[in-house]
Structure formats: structure tokens, C-alpha cells
Length: 130
View 1: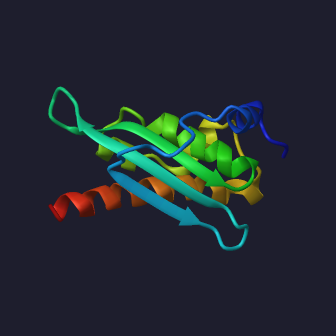
View 2: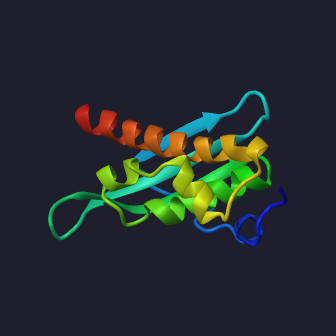
């Protein structure tokens, strides 16, 4: 299966790329088999209902086309969502938004989800430590 147009576009024109200043949570994940490494940064704020939302999100990825595209898409999917909504996102959501991934590249969508969860865990551990 070749890469979809959405994957190529997300790779060539990634959204929310770069390190977020004053981030509240950092999720760092890697795949030792393929060498992909992903840093996901989140900034948390409260919405009008007082619920914590992912106000801003960005990433730095060192990896293949699918890893960079999955990283870009997870930022699009999670931005503006409450933390609980964002944590319900799945690798299938990422893969579907990308128009599919070759079977051998599905692990890239898993990396993106894992990074989001680790960023939220990092935020929560810092908040609980206050």
C-alpha cells in the first residue's frame, strides 16, 4: 500500500511542528526497532466550563514519513479537546485521518498516541506535585 495523499501532505506540510515554549507536559517516545523518536508538547488551559483542555500542542519527530505524518495529525486531532476527550483518541483515529497507513507503518500511529498519553501523564504528575 503506497502512502495516501493525506500522509504525503502531512509529511511535507506538518502542522504544529516545533518545540512549544512553556509547555505543561512532554511526552517522549521512541521505537528502538525503526529508530523513530517523537517529542510531543502540550499546553493546558481551562475552557468556559472550567474543564482542562489542550490549548496548544506541538511536536518534534525524528523518523520516517509515516511517523512525521502521524505526529502532525495527532496534534490536529487533540488540539482544543478536553484531556479526557484527547485520551480517547486511538491509533485507528490517526490512521483513518491519514487515509490509511501501510501495515508495516501502523506502529507510527501508536507512537503518536503513546506520546499524547505520556504528555498528559507528565502534566498530571507535575500538577499533583505542586
